[in-house]
Length: 204
Image 1 (cartoon, rainbow, N blue to C red):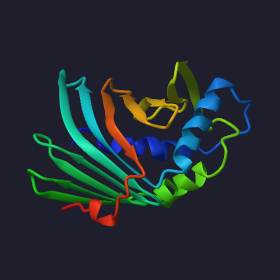
Image 2 (cartoon, rainbow, N blue to C red):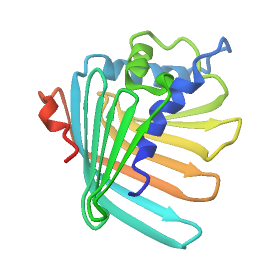
Image 3 (cartoon, rainbow, N blue to C red):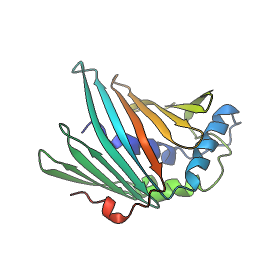
Image 4 (cartoon, rainbow, N blue to C red):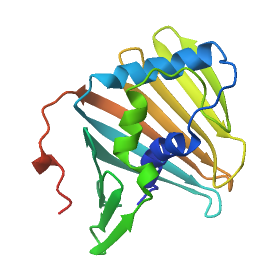
């Protein structure tokens, strides 16, 4: 799997950070609030993805295609197509992963504070200050917004960058790691409020 968990890592990053009372940085705060508002009225969404992983140690780039689905309040599904076939299901804070070729299943229980329900509790309230312990930079070119989020405390992740349109459609997510590895996920054909049911979130 090409670091599929890093999509969820972006969500968990905000949950761990909380918010602080520091003065807002204008466009950074506005971009975070715009991203929040875009998802308030979204019951579900589906999108096709192209994922590119640059591996520093192996000096190679791995590219795969797949799909992601989400349904409130707590369902997230991602499937990566062959040759790196895998399926991932997150229900609130319980994560199940199935590696298709190897026929290996993994079951992981995340801390409750990293569950999807808490993320959407956060999204229900306006963003009035920036996440604690991070540096945030925002850019806007026409209707395209970009946010770059860098943890100050270090850790495995060096930075997250997310690019989205004013109507809430995600364009790209980039995760840079301290070891030099880089994962870029591009979103295509994103559909919000597609009427997804629980049958669209089956691992096998």
